[in-house]
Amino acid sequence: MFRIGHYGVSLALYAPLGGLLLAGGHSTAAVAGGAVVCWLAMLPDLDHRLPGISHRGPTHTLAFVALVGGAVWAAASAGSSAAGLGGLAVGPVGFPAFAGGIAGFAVLAHIVGDLLTPMGVALLWPVSGHRYTLSLTPADNTAWNYGLFALGVFATAAAAYLGVAAATDGAVPLVSL
Image (cartoon, rainbow, N blue to C red):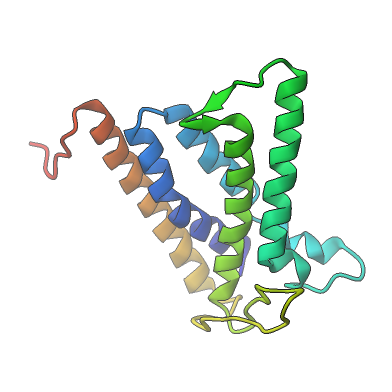
């Protein structure tokens, strides 16, 4: 999948969470979470630059999701404690949990994008080398990549609209005259 397709999948998957954060009055967390999900959208493809690591190998697994989420949680915990910000909250949870959760989510969104392609991913590596795929489109299909991006932008806009409307007055106008 191209970078633009991964951005689209990431946005589409994050949109409901971002909308819920907006509806709960956590606009900074919603925007920051979306930005981080997009920023880390290509992290699993770091394997292109690592010698001895095959593409869609260890960096495209649930183990890597847990590793990234756990490492970011640990770093955020240590950093916030060292800065005297141990009780810092982002949205409805503490900063370390939010940071680790969003980082893991970003990696998981990338993997979901690659599940759409015939090559698939070995989700359960190192337990199993079986590759899982939905085989919907080749990774290099330009129409699918841009279509997924458009879907992500639309989902994000819809979630933002609904989330802000819910936060402001609880009513979602379907038509404004």
